[in-house]
Length: 135
Image (cartoon, rainbow, N blue to C red; front, top):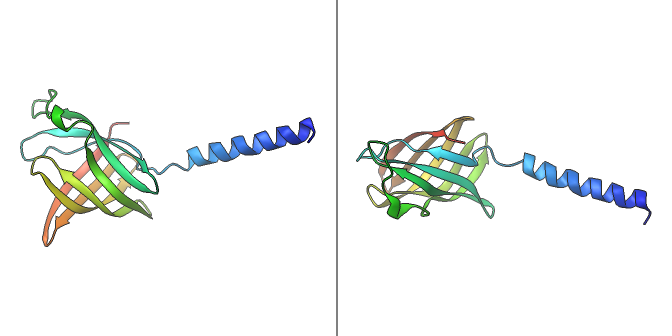
């Protein structure tokens, strides 16, 4: 291969890497949950987990906005969520620490900064509210 050929290959690899980063799912990022039954809320880092989407609690706050719920930091809150296109996600689970319940869930990206979550256990459904993007 000539130097020109090597440069072309390197440029192609760089462009594919950049395209992959640019194609990141818009739901990826950190989201602030709505207050739970106790007024506590958290920051959930949503990211890819293989071909699915998951979310981990990275910060937790009590009803006064002070650090709280530290025993749950690092735990999965969202897992096995699949992107369906059009900002809709389903097939996953969301764990609610306040009730220690796991819901079969869905999410919908309303816009770049608002994520509506909901879930059900059998026929009992719960509106998880609209999470707001932190970053």
